[in-house]
Amino acid sequence: MRHALIGLIWFAGCVTPSIPIPPPDPSSMTFKVLDVGEPGSRASFSYLPDANYSEATVFVFNRDRGIGIITTASVDGSVGETAPVGADLGEQIVVTFERDDQTVSTCIRLREGAQSATDYCSP
Image (cartoon, rainbow, N blue to C red; front, side, top):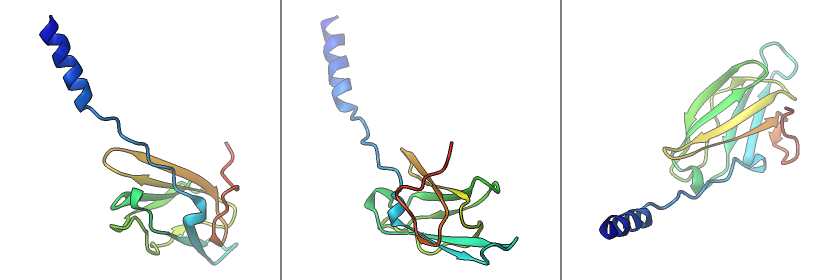
């Protein structure tokens, strides 16, 4: 019994909890919105370097229209300008970074250029 307890303690010591990565920061997001107010309006996304997101799968999803795109972050965690996704100003956009061990998301209300750290989606 004692050996089993020692083995269990040793095994538990080898399992390290993963440190959670922060959700995407809206102030590091930039959107370029084209054809504002038109039925074909669309927006491309980019994100500043963040080592937490190195080579993560990136999802940019428009909750209001139910459409999105998928791309991959660079080694430095940045995302270059993506292909455009159907979107217009004020629509709810969810940006998700998915790594093998964790997935984090932030939902913002779309605006031109840099995004607001206080203009999150409504419930």
